[in-house]
Length: 403
Image (cartoon, rainbow, N blue to C red; front, side, top):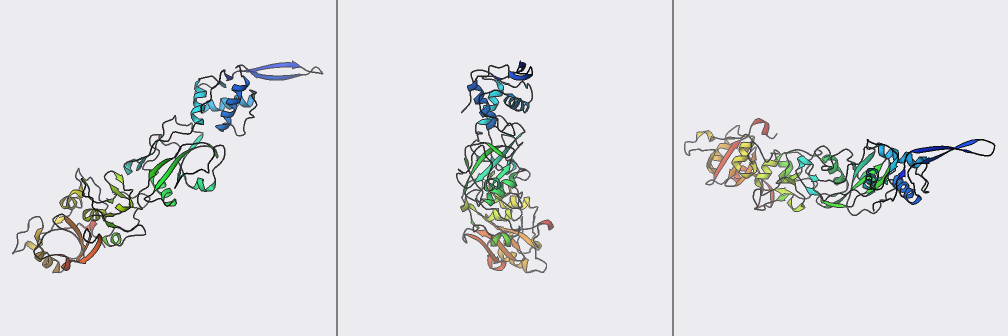
């Protein structure tokens, strides 16, 4: 609740000498503002709440040197006029009240990982540089926190420093990895977490924002980008076949840039937060094995097998210019593809697709995410290819060959 005063507090210093017994004088210091006791008490309480001075100012209704010095110190943090006076409805009082109120943390929403993955922002005036701003993450409502005191070790370990960040973007590409570390620390992958903003002066908590919930990403993948490593899964929830049938994307796929050394699932422009979508469809599995971006030269590789081949700089295989079939854009019958791979020197990594289903072939083994298998499957090429089915085959360049 905002503080209001009826008359000014503080003001200019007045010194006067008063005779005492023995003929000696003592100096009495007063200040020019009205300094009514009730108003002074409220300003002293505000100064203490904002931790303006190292030691609390006695709340006694007497406008003394410590009170006025506290006002001056507070004014100096903002620059401009430093007169040691707080006026009713004036700038100094407005700034004191703004800092004393909990920071208005806005509702949190997902955004592009390039912009920090989450929009975390507040609206009030940016605190002066003497204050620290921390972002506290917890699994559920946290009641063990009180302004006027320090943070216990548990809460402190769940905070990240956001001092100096733009109030419209407290999370960005530079500190996103630290944010994800807190999610992992709190075991929040795929769950709902809670965020609060803490305003600190030195090690004293000045104010706490209200809580805002957010949906944490599903557990990222920390393994190697090979078909077999991705296929066998990791320590997270089981990887399954994901197909929603919704345009423009069907499955989920890896964001093309690591965050904290791990690959996060992405869908559209944001990270995936629902555990049931931890997996791939056929084309997103292929693209994720190479961490392919969703926009390459204005083209989305995940919209077609041909787009994916172009993004990977793959080359259509001529299949040795078969005499029995005319090979156009690498397309031919399965019987011919079997003959092609039976030749010497045909090891390596290839793209292979029939209709809308695309797979990776490595050393004559097929690696895929298939709806019929509800996930990953590895099959010998000779057992996977049908003699009379039409296929496209592309060879991959040297930098896309798996070892």
